Each structure stands twice: as structure tokens, then as C-alpha cells.
Image 1 (cartoon, rainbow, N blue to C red):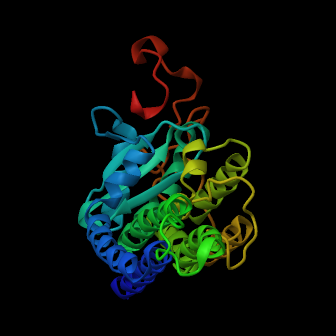
Image 2 (tube, one colour):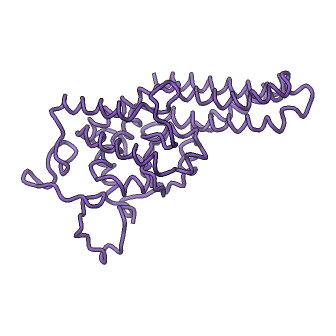
Image 3 (cartoon, helix red, strand yellow):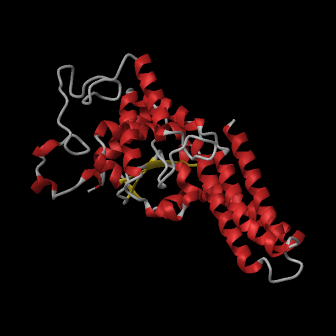
Length: 329
């Protein structure tokens, strides 16, 4: 079903490419746009994940550079019965995260430094479990391909401003058509993105809660991220709004409505669904619990204070740790 949905979206994006090409260069422009779109479809399938990661300046980390974070992802991936994805960190103050890749064997998860600083270890686990759920259901293929193509369509529409009226036969609808295309083509690309059902977020929330074993970890994380997202700007996302739907919470300022034109469901609705799931599962475990609800360190272990993202508390040996902040070194 995911492959069929991706094929429909690619066809829609290709049609938009051809329409823009027709507006710029008539039938000849439409054929050129068809060739370009076909090449873009192939390229985005194989390379869109690397493009998005590069766009956000994500840097890959491993057990040597981020032992706790990578270890967490590895443990959650094992619980989800997934291959270990590549793990990236984005230097951004806004707490957020996304997953990318064409399939589970070629997947990556990325979290911002803001997320690792602002959230508890349990909340980070809930977020990463959500992203692994996207990978498990092949949502990442659809999200990365549509992000790449939507951005390209917007850029192509902007080209029309410069080339759409240079030759008499290029644009059969004249200057008015060019102006309308510049406005409507990016909007149409956005609507196609919205065709990726927003219910996938609810599904990923539920699956992620089952992966980590605690729905309220993710619910708490969503509340925090949503609050920060509307206070702390993500300038790279603002420059590339076509990628907004990839994040766990919309990184753009001002989008709160749960309607057909939103990139995400309302956070309040997602939290309510997770609270209902927690009740079904018999409630949430204490903050110091492991993924499956068993206390870390044995049956008698107690929750450690969480004054930093990883429960080190105020007793961290700053001299031995070299003043490190978070698990990225």
C-alpha cells in the first residue's frame, strides 16, 4: 500500500512538473519537464534522504561520539525488529526530530540538539520510537520524495517569473498565467504533500508508544516540543517549508489548526490519543523505567533525578567529562 501511495504521489508531482513546463514553454516545455521530472523521481528515490540531511547540516554520530543516544536508538530498533538506522544530530535550538530513507535497510533518524537538551531521556526515547515507527511503515520514503519534489516544483515555478514571458509562444496564457502559476504551483505541491494522510502521525504515535512501552513518554515529549516549536524558530525549516511534514512536530511558526491544510494533526488530539492508549495499557510506568516498563538496574531500582537529558543529575563530573553537554560530545 505504501508503494502504491508513493507511486500516486510521484504521478501527481510529475503532472505538476509538466503543467509548469507547459506554462513556461508550451508543448515543448511540457516534454522537457516530463524528462526532468522522470530524472528527478529516480534521483529523489535514491538520494532524497542525503539531500534532506545535508540541508539541515545533520552530522552522523556513532557509539564513540554519542554512546547513550546511539545505544538508545539501537535498543529501540531491536524492540521494533528493525535494522539499526544511521543516527544524526542537527545543531538547532528548536527541539524536533525526523526520520528519512527509502526503506528500513537504508534509513536514518535525526534529532536536534535542542531536543536532546530540553527533553528527558524517557521523552527522547518516545520521540525516537515514533520515528522508528515511520521507518517500519515506509512513511519515510513518501515523506522524503515528496519533500524533494515539492521544493523543486516551487523552484521551477519561480523560474517562470524570469523565463515565462521571454518568448511569444512559450506561455499560451500570457503574463497573467505566469503569475497564477507562480502562486498556484507551489500551493498545489503543498496540497499533494497533504495527500500523505495525516493519520500516519497517529499510527506512528501509537506504534512508537508500543515500541518504547510507555505512551506517556511520547505524550510528554509532544507537549514540550510543540510549546518550544512556536517559540524557538527553525530558520532552515522556514527556508525549506516543503520539508515541514517530515518532523515529529511542525517546525514552522503559527500552524496549529487540525484541518486539511495542516502538515500535522493538532498536538492536543495526538496527546489525547496517547492518553487513551495509556489507559488501555494500564497506565504509564515511573520515569525511571526501562523500555518495557521494568525499572532499570533491577527490580529495586529507583528513578534517578533528571536535571539533564540523560538522568545524570547534578552530580556529573564536569572535569572528567570535559564539560560535555548531552551525548554528542
